[in-house]
Amino acid sequence: MTLSNANLEMIRRLIRRQVIPPLQKMIEKLEGADLSDLMMKLTPNEQRILITALHLSGKAGVMLKELPEGKLKNVLEKIPDEMLVKIMCQIQADDAAMLLESVDRERASSVLEKLPGKLNDKIEEILRFPSDTAGSLMNTYFLEFFSDMSAKDALDKIRKWSINQQDPIYSIYVLDDSHHLMGHIPLRNLALADPEDTLDNFMLHDPVTVNAYQTTDEAAYVITRYDLVSVPVVDDNHRMVGIIMIDDVIDTMMESVAEQAFSMQGITEEDRIDTPAFKSIKSRFPWMMINLVTAFIASSVVGLFEGSIQKVVALATFMPIVAGLGGNSGTQALAVMVRSLALGEIEISEARKAILRQVFISLSLGIVVGLVTGGLAFLWKSSPVLGLVIFLSMLINMIIGGLVGTGVPLLLKSLGQDPAMGGGVLVTATTDSMGFLCFLGISTLFIQYM
Image 1 (cartoon, one colour):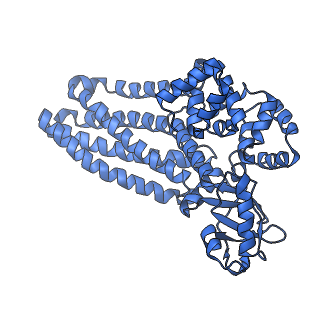
Image 2: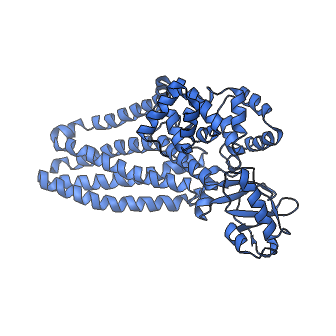
Image 3: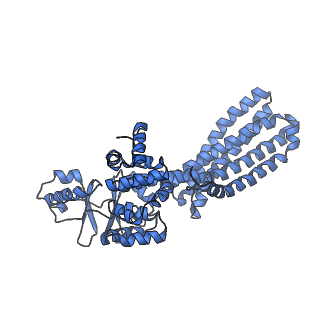
């Protein structure tokens, strides 16, 4: 069942009347993503009743792990500790750890103490890894298979496991007695194997792995590069400590893309549509002031050439074109470089090659676009000199845009900062100022011929 408008209204009516059994039947048919959407469309009082129904249906955890971070914190505040403990016992350890990270430290410690010992240990094992590492994404519940086990015994073990587990199994991982990872077997190969054959006879050696302390971006890169649906996580001694599923990586990649898009415009990831106004103002104000300063710099550059503009008024017509095209060149180079750094396609050691390539692209585009724009200016204003000035200034500014768009994220990366942070603001500020300077400066040199 999907969350149609009719279903939404029916659920709201049941919630208002507090008719729990029929409400349970309806929500049991909804997927986690739909339950998350439903929760966000309800009032605080309606949310409390829905949480109770979800808890009774065993679907509260499925809903909570689909909620956006900002909403999740608000919803968790409405859930008593006793209920939260029961919910966490119904979900995987990695999802339970994610819920604990969304509450304050004192409450997290209190809830953690009330959890069963085995689950407590699994969650603490995950929480010891920083939030941006592969260890924080992994599920520590996984089946252990050993090389002397038969294919029949391995399949029987999977059948028993699947009765109480939600996560599907695509590959099994073979360990030695010290839990070092020896190899892996796709589930299809296991199903087709001779039932009495031992795993060491047909396992695939040297499986792709990620270290628990590698970044989440690196883990995502490994999964996408090798087209995996799951990847084993190992420690520094190559002992297997968990598994990362592709759905966890997709969530991380989407968050990373959104964060980079925000960062390029000087906006923090926490700044959302329902973020308190004062918090949004506080986070945006510094970048607005930087924009103000750069705008004054660009204006002062224009002010230096007021005499030239007064003599040839047409210059004012073409100033935004030169600055805008240079800015576009820069933001394109910036987007390419930020994406390449995020996906691990380029290292800092290859910076020179990357910069030269983007500058060459900007140069080529500058020649073509400059010729077109200069030609149009010549036809419009009947001034070949004006067309030449526009061509030269646009060519120079687009090269500068490519240089800055490539160089800013590389510089930030080398300094250990987010490559996307404020890149769009810095590129636009540079190309505006340099575009005006190039265009008006060259125009002044040739003004007597215009």
